[in-house]
Length: 123
Image 1 (cartoon, rainbow, N blue to C red):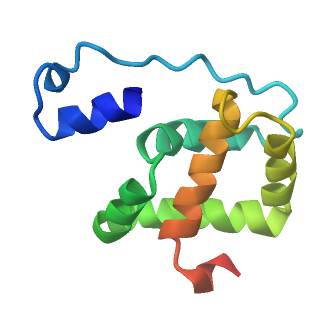
Image 2: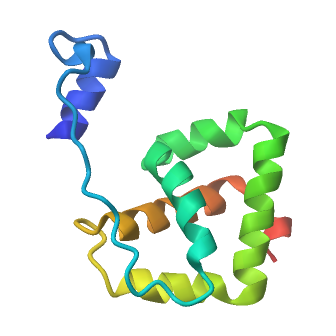
């Protein structure tokens, strides 16, 4: 329902464009995140909140500044080379992808990385 309100607000439909009605997600629960993977929390929180929809990732892909792309590329490389991508993904797979805010943020971060980081850098 809030997604519908958000889209109506983006289109300028009253009363939805005022932004007075907003959904406040629960605080993420990072309990059980694999040891040594806490570095994922900050980028998941930053990128996961802003880019939760495919069209947002597509827009980012076409407009991302070089320094942000370099940051995401380095994160993607670290996650993959260390094996942390699989460890964090396994942790998230045991949680609710609909109700668990930490799981949602990690999945959205992974979506950003898959959608924005060029494939050669991902190997």
